[in-house]
Length: 289
Ligand code: NAP
Image 1 (cartoon, protein in one colour):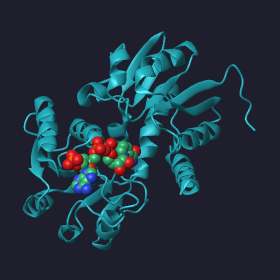
Image 2 (image 1 turned 30 degrees about the vertical axis):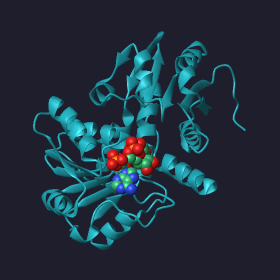
Image 3 (image 1 turned 180 degrees about the horizontal axis):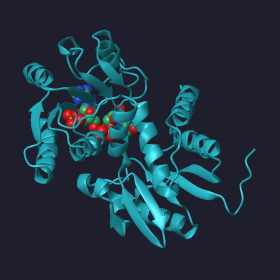
Image 4 (image 1 turned 90 degrees about the vertical axis):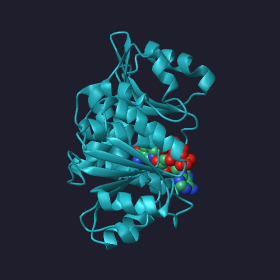
């Protein structure tokens, strides 16, 4: 049993609901592995009490918090400062409490790109990416890919107006980087041919709909790097079929791991072990299934 004292540094995940989250297991295992005296808890905070909840953590001397659905945009209103990662995409998933000030970051996207480079062995700089989906996950990932110097982003979504809105935001900051398409067979086929890598940010493939897939995998070639942000199941149909076609792949748990790892670095300056966090997250996921 770890010794929890008044010196223990506190962090939390705030959202509604948060009961299903594997982040406490992932963070607490990382702190123990680092020999860091920290404790990470999940706090369920309703939207109407968001500011009170954030101010209470500040009062109690928390080092920081992660923010999840539905608070990622609303929490921005209480930040004294925004890092470029959050400013660019308009969403905060990590808050640093320091010297009485609150600074907001977005490590969802930066974590995804770091995972892509370190775990996937793929550098998106100068490459063309196909992003399937245009929701919250796509937002963070697309801006981080743009910041990492990706050449083009082809955004394909069921509701084309959402793809157009995301492309338009990206093009304001990175002129000409993004194109939007409706999720049709023809558009998909053209986009897959033009792309070097594919990121699924839709819910397709997620439990219980494990047989669904966002793109026609028969069009994939071994040159494509294919990743999924869905992590339940760990190997989605997209990744299974991409692997069978000789593609390099990265599953969604690495995005979760690296966004957490980046948050720990922001709060403590320490670099946690991705593997330790990965194994803790996978074990916690299995416990929940
Ligand atoms: P969201 O904002 O609700 O967006 C969902 C996206 O999926 C939209 O683009 C939606 O298209 C598309 N979609 C949903 N059902 C579809 C269907 N039947 N056919 C075609 N497209 C469909 O959700 P989100 O927050 O982006 O989350 C998306 C996924 O990412 C979830 O599985 C979530 O668990 C995962 N995620 C993972 C991480 C990680 O750390 N690995 C982090 C964040 C999220 P429309 O616009 O047409 O509705």
